[in-house]
Length: 343
Ligand code: KG4
Ligand code: ZN
Image (cartoon, rainbow, N blue to C red; front, top):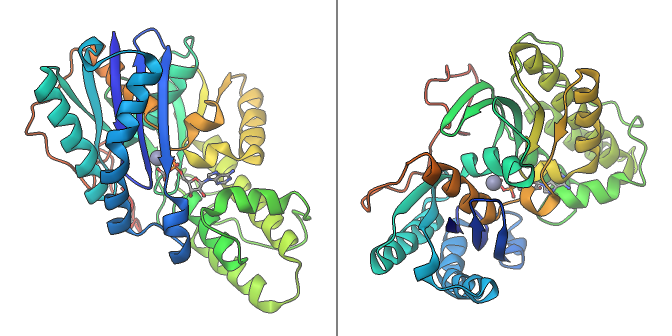
């Protein structure tokens, strides 16, 4: 079973070919960092135009790299949301056109499901249910992944996502976009205990997240002029790690029968985050699973793989499937007091 996956929900355009037995035949990706860097964040209209320009060539590149044609593909999986709607529409419409032209089924993939199932692409032994910490620029959630299409949200952020906190702190420190990798690099030469920073919601009984207060504290630390930027970066990263670990610990107590602790999403590329979660899993006697770094940040292999899992479960979609700017993985999750715009 060979699946073509397309991703275009934020600022990465990508196409990949993945088989049902976990072989990644090709993954082509074009980032847009240079286009958005002058604005310090992703500009939706610029992103959508870049997806239009890049997606076709990337699909051709992936097919050539895998030495296959559209005819060899079993189904076409495209991100159908959530994300910046202009970009999502570019990828989904492209997927529909290819599906129609080649007479192949279409699979609309929830971008978050792509992240949630990506650890199973990397690790054949990972079985359901597992506790997933999904930490990216747009999302910060703890999910019990019970099966394909079965996600129980145990916690979410009431304000910013973890990646957003990294990006905003980076901006305050005068570092470029995206901020996560830049903060991580700067933190290497700083003292994580030099600047006293808050750990919002740590110690509370529900495992929700909050990062807005931490970001404000970083702003005050920068404005005070009393600290080295390296120390602020290291102290911020330590505070963020402490929050993620404490919240995940609470969720583990609620995640009955979880076979593993899994982390996915762009922030999972952070080595301090990975290390701390690995220790937490070990303390709970659970295996720790984190996809390789390139599979943690946005890519199309995870969309192709989620498509493969859905196709194997008999799930395909009609060609009039709508693109969705918001699309929660667990529609039954109770709304959280204070939760704002994040899905
Ligand atoms: O999953 P992703 O590529 O896109 C979204 O769906 O949001 O995640 C991007 C986010 C950005 O906020 C970026 O700053 C963060 O992941 N990130 C990191 C690191 N690499 C990427 N945060 C902390 N440390 C990193 N090394
Ligand atoms: Zn993502």
